[in-house]
Image (cartoon, rainbow, N blue to C red; front, side, top):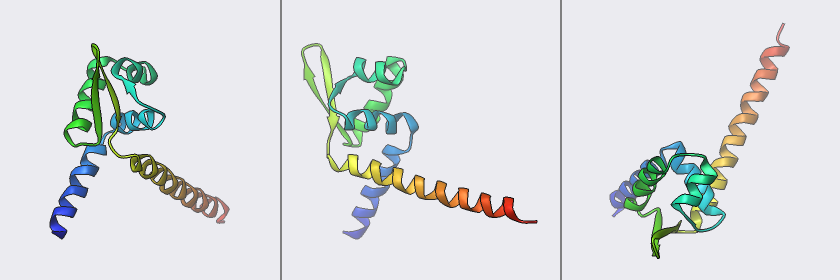
Length: 109
């Protein structure tokens, strides 16, 4: 059982392991969007966005619902928003540590 959870976590984090996929998730945190809307916000071409959305869908991180001729994408689990916020806090903590270290180095004789 524990191995299943570890495998799920590994697969889940692999799905997040791309800057554009993270950015797509950040956009979807603000609300459901279709490919054209995501593309416009990211300033990226549709094929790249569609390719990354396909990865996120295959790993069950986002869901897509057909709406006429387009697909509306949303986060599969709202906790992803919290996860991204925590990742940002961890990044900020690392940045603060790096800045503190830099100040120590600069103040050395």
